[in-house]
Image (cartoon, rainbow, N blue to C red; front, side, top):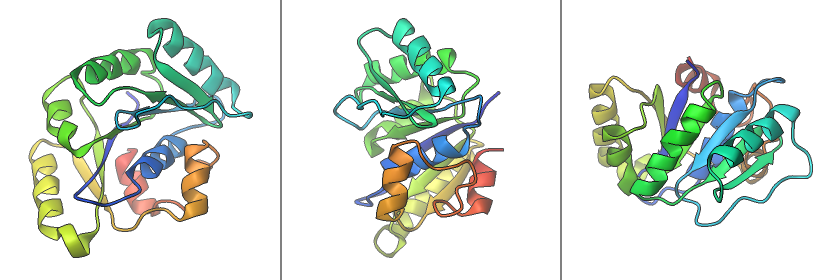
Length: 191
């Protein structure tokens, strides 16, 4: 089974969407696209001029299964935007069934994390984007809850740089993620 990683911000931290895209890029391969399910987007993603054949194929399969959903292939990933509510979680579960062979990153608003964990999404790992100087205690509580559920957490203390974040959202980061996420955290999330 391919890895499924939840990505959420803690408190007022910024950069969780780009981190989720970086995780999806990290799990992509030449013949297998990564899937980014964004439940905190608010608008449909724009298709990129350049996308791999695997990303376009995954986009077509998801569009056929979820007509009307905002889906676009972007570089090495397929980006699916859904509403951040219960309907969005159900549609995300359907998209996970369609893209079961893709490494998937699900970007959630903080208020939906518990609903996702108690509902249809069963992650193998979680990435928390947190500013530890401001939200250390809240981050520790969130990580402890994830560990108690048997989910491997990782904490990203700083957002991606501007260029790395833009490249991740465009699906243009390579699978190594050298400049984006620390290798030990990435390897732990994608095992």
